[in-house]
Structure formats: structure tokens, C-alpha cells
Length: 188
Image (cartoon, rainbow, N blue to C red; front, side):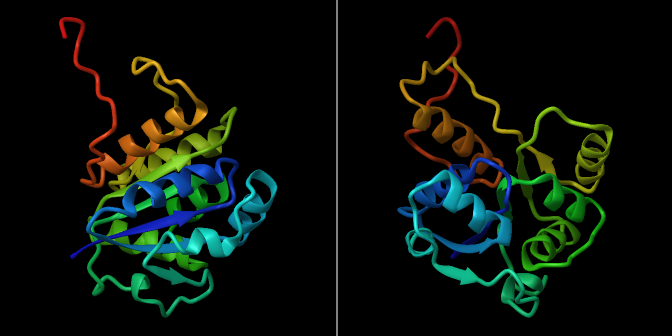
């Protein structure tokens, strides 16, 4: 069975992580979830979801401080990790291998084992430290994927925009979402 890790950190955009969980729920993929302390606070501020609501969408829940969890070891095989959203704090910790919580340790493991890591970074404007951290992660093999809206599919709602961004990010992990609109070219 395929395994994907979903990390949700404390940046604005908690619904990106929720959408990733919702899109993967019907698929034959074992989903491991880790939420940072900041993510829990953002969940309360931005959504009406309880933590239990979110945890029901994953197969395995890992506490943020459990550095002995399965996803903290390279011997536990996964197909990669998506951090949605990814705060600048989590980006910095990942860029500098500061595996100080399970989210950043799991990302470190994914990178060291050359598995796909996709970070939906959420901050604007960006300062030089943010840009350098993005460069470091990219040089290590990670993929920086800001959730920039695409309008060629003519979204009818904010949920359509979120779904498209998350679906594209998941595709970088080899997770194909069938209902995701794709560009077919001008001649189609």
C-alpha cells in the first residue's frame, strides 16, 4: 500500500491541508497526519472544524512531539510528504535540518531518503531569509509549491481554487485526482 505523510503547519491556509486529506480519503493510500501546535491554533482561527473532524480524515495520527513515531525513521517507507500549508518557521527548520518536532523530522527523513517533499509555503511578501530557505530546500530535492491560484480552469468558488492548488501539489507526489481540471490547450 502507498503511504503519504501530510503535515499541516501554522501558516494561514489550514484549508489546504484539509483539502489534501479530503482528496486522498477515497484513494487507496495510507495517510499519516502530523499537525504542528501552530496549525491547531490556525484551525481554530480560520475554520469551524474540530481537531477530531480533521483527524478522522487520516489513517494514522502522529503527535507533533513524538520523535519516536514511525514517520521519524527512514526505515518506514513512504511515497513522500506534503506540508500544506508550510509556515516560514517550518520551512526554515526543514531548510536547516532542525528536526525539532515530528513535522520537521519527517520532512528531514523524506529529504535524506530522496523521496518527494512538497511544501505549500504561505507567506507574502517574502524576505531574503525566506527566499534563501526555499533555495536550500530546492537544492536538497524538495519542491516549493506556493498555492498560487490558476484561473484557466475558470473556478466557480474559493473551494475550486483550493482544490486545484492542492490537486496539483499532490500530483507532484504521484497522486492523481481524476476530477482535477487540466489545461488542454487552446485547440481543445
